[in-house]
Length: 71
Image 1 (tube, rainbow, N blue to C red):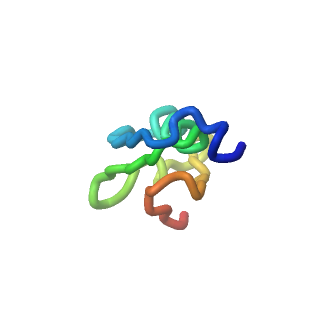
Image 2 (image 1 turned 90 degrees about the vertical axis):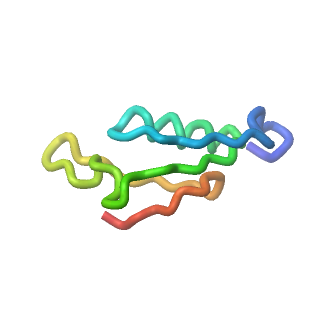
């Protein structure tokens, strides 16, 4: 999708969500062109420390401003 097709281009989103579904929405909004700023606790999103089937995988896009920590 190029810049002309991104319906949220020019929109800034401040994301305070945690766990799986909230951050997933931040990624989708970034993919749609929004400038997403993710705000996390100092220790990072608790999802990164889940064990077993709840373990999250990090997906960072160039459309997001979030700092992506390695897991």
